[in-house]
Length: 489
Image 1: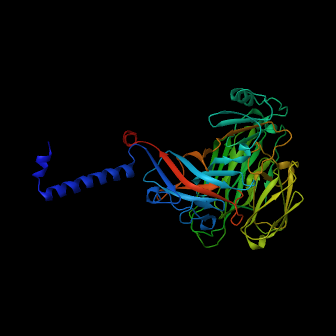
Image 2: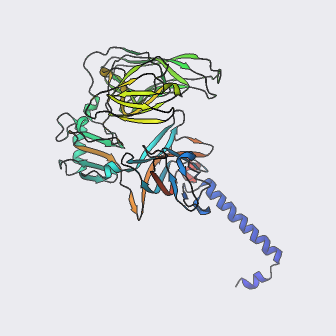
Image 3: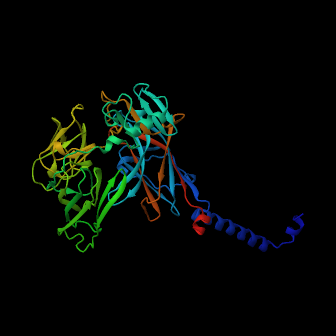
């Protein structure tokens, strides 16, 4: 019925109408992709890539020495870790990262994890599992509900609810010494009563005069008196960025106290040493606390004073000053070490086993006897970055670790191991490929110039090893508030 009417329209009018409709559709598309009015959108990048893969939003993985991108082939990751950015038109509350991949990895690299950057100052990523072959290959009985799974050496529990109820009481079947001895975990940190057991003896003060560089976390025990932490700091002023310092105190995963030291940054890049101090005192409360010293690598902790001698550093320790040999103790059976300068190259004695540091800035790994409850780390000189899944201390008596054993790449079942609890789902098979997903809370995640920063981590994967992770696709599903929620809230 409209054909006779349309035939009477001049050609120029039709052309203008066409362009008006085109502009209207372009504005609608721009509005949709820029505003995302319904609160959700999906971006993906495929390899081999094409224009339809959304490569303008998921930026190229880096650094170049850890990735191989060849025409007509999947993305190949040959080193750890690998970073990529996601450009988004607005902020979102949640991201679901889905990775389709193929793994050609040795038994020493059983973990594949993804993460989002949540703190740029200390480069902290919120890591979530994609694959854990230690769990996937474990021949124990398994109970699962959703992503929560329990592996049992013997069939002591018929349901997860019964196990969790006993765990909440701190009384598991076949665990006479408590869950801390027979339970390991992955991607979960349950609370149970004997995690809070502390010494009945009044605490004695501890002074650590060994300088430490950058951010550190530690466990400290309070027997009931006021808990006090004092820091003497030195700002090296070697970079342009300001160097604020935060001293945060946590109990049972909750922030209970905090102190902050701002930096006016008046001496940036001058190399002039500026001394500062920061302290925190918390009222009487018996228990085990976690202390976070949040600082950049431009800050040196010259002296640390604690009201309790029970004090251990969590996962990472960076002693500096060039003062000579140093003895450090750990409850872990493996160690990662990196010489920060050529002057720090040496052979470390780790639990009686040699660990040679041959090149600066390269990470080396060592193994000590697994049955030792405490291992000695003897350094000929410091300025070495030490990392492990356990804790470090400057005396065997100071070692304190309320955390449960984690199913990491170096995890080994002990004779008393009975249970493993994990928030984890095995990747799904997609023919010759696998697909795994991880969900991240983006509220408070670091975002700069419209980009979120993500990481793919394969601990133990090194360039030149002949091993790799082939990535066919990375998809990120984002969700957040709708336009109407933004307008009316």
